[in-house]
Length: 226
Image (tube, rainbow, N blue to C red; front, side, top):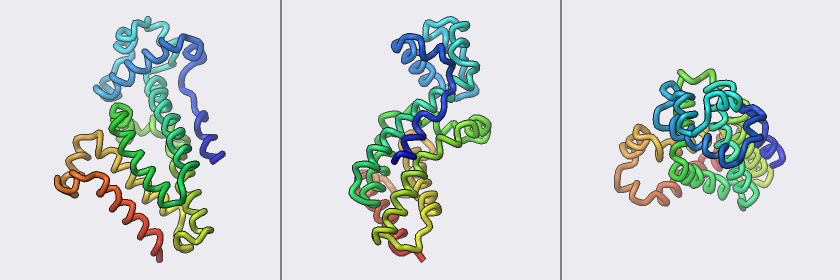
């Protein structure tokens, strides 16, 4: 868990002057920027518009962020830090690997619903057009869940809870892909419709049952690895 927490403050994309301004101003700028990036997408968003709507001069905005890219990455990084807090709590308060996986799956849904704009920005970040930005974040953004998942799977192997033949890295990669698509399925119209086509309206009427079956699928996969 120490390694997981070390990921929390690894990246910083804003200037020191942003830290020195008032908390109210910081939150106002970030809130406006989040709304603009989520509703318009990165390419169509203007840092000038964000400054105007925030009541901040463009000069002050550039004293906080070197570029629109750095402002965008600051927003994404704020969400990453928030997710680290959530995952750390799950890791520390789970009975075993299966309880942890269930809680992470539920967290994927609740995060997507409660923070729909952040989730839309993450989806935008996965496009090829924003790959240069994603590369600047990849060392921290994608190190959080793998650290937790591979750690709990290795512990479960040592405790005899899952097959010793399980490759923790491969299992973590596959499980995290399930979490990611599931999370996008609550904030993207495309993924929402995709989930509906696969599961049907009747299944989606009981989302807790859907989650129980997903966990069961993962459990069987790592219990019976060959």
